[in-house]
Image (cartoon, rainbow, N blue to C red):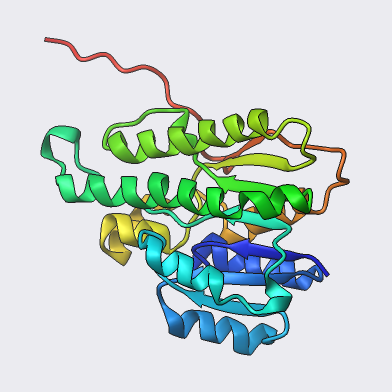
Amino acid sequence: MKTAFVSGATSGIGEATVRALVGAGWRCVATGRRAERLDALVAELGADRVHAAVFDVRDTAAMDAALDALPQEFRAIDLLVNNAGLAAGLANAQDAELSNWQTMIDTNVTAMVTLTRKLLAGLIERKGAIVTIGSVAGNYIYPGGNVYAGSKAFANHFTLALRADLHGTGVRVTSIEPGMVETEFTLVRTGSQEASDKLYAGVNPMTAEDIADTIRWIAELPPHLNVNRIELMPVNQDFAGFRVARD
């Protein structure tokens, strides 16, 4: 039985990924800050299939402690799903809170590369796989995206750089770059259910399960086949054109 390590598994894409992988016969280490949500996943899916690792990915000492405390049957990681991430605020750069920028960099960049580096030796040993959740925001810029877009551009390209560095190791590496997915992610960014509902009204957006099914598909491809990057959007979303401001 193979084992996946899924960061940010207390809601949204991460939670759906744990369910999808366990349903396909995997074990999962599910991480996040909200112990009660991880405990619910363990209760639902079974302690033999899911191990809850409660820590904030921005806390390196807590990350190390959680990795050291993994039960023996969950220690051999075959798949890392770098899912933990957030967007804080939609203000233009000149009006944005610097603390929001720092939180996004700490979570989407620093924590992601730290966790990847710590698991890399084992993934190479097992010829495993790395799937990172980037974003179309890293490819297509929009007003208010600023540091979030920059952090996801980093995630997208760091993942491709990993692919180059891991040449010849047998490790498969994929950047998944979704567009509009309706999850708690937008609640964090907008701060209200009303604002989230307004954003997705009439869009028929993707769901967490859509992305989780994509992750499961990639994870279970033959070992000689690598999906380098995959960009997904709901049919009702596309990339915007240029804008012109006139005097």
